[in-house]
Length: 440
Image (spheres, rainbow, N blue to C red):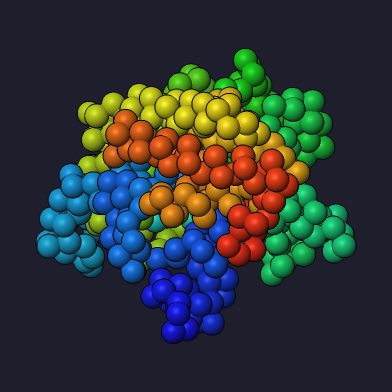
């Protein structure tokens, strides 16, 4: 290990102590560039990051997996959190900020009456599904998209037989999920009304809820969300919108407000606390009725930092017009990718859709190798970069301009390697691992 950086050395040690190396799949260095991507940070501010060896990077990836919409260590959020910590973040009594946050969320969402809190998105989805099952006294949940790691969700990946476990959603292994949960989670593809209607026809009498993202990268077809809502209600089920990723990014309060389609329950996390753990489940009084009778309780759901951070975050998101800002930065990034690809003849496809979740892909048989080489080369220019970016308030035109200069140089290298059929020579380690597939 003598020639290994401090950052890399710690990760090699971590893999001996922590199964999988990290707590989150999306933060494994192997998902970006094995043996090269820095695993740990010493400091993160705005959109800038310093690793344990003092290397400086601009973060042009997912910025805390979408959690830091204001940027890292936002001073206003930090100030509010620091004050709460100095006055005690945990107590035998309850933090009043949770009531203030519940009121604010219901003010932003006039259709909602009640709120329960958790501390992360996976927990919040599990709470929402438990409440829906308790309210309806039914078991089956229809799912579309990704909603966490818990048994209720991964039950969809058990397949109809052991030989099919993991077949539906590659990359989401259900090992450890009881086989007895088979049939409690059923799936449908986004936008496919006929498939959803068939699912309703099969499970109507047992369906507790439909949980889905109202959108991911593009608008739904006109009437699609309304159709899902109406069919779910006709079957006696509740509609849950998962706003964990798109919420606050596309529209202040969530994408469903943008479309004017109100669910029975909505779930928020990620950007809600700008890097501080907080998740929220909001719903109508009728939909949330099951929460009174089902045991849903956890000690750290009562600490004060989460709701304090959320209050400061939501107020600043609105005051600063963050949705418009990240859309503008995202459009700049998309144009930068298009221009560099066209200039150098690099086969790049820039995805249509929301600039707040801008992404591109290499259109080539060695796409993953090209993506990995791109990431490693951009590290050398001082950028954490992949094929997607979640822009933040901290990203500026100057930062995008610096990124564009580095991109121009790196795409020139990739173009040269393509011309000589030597793309794999650009790799400094194995190609990046592949993620899981969504039902979107």
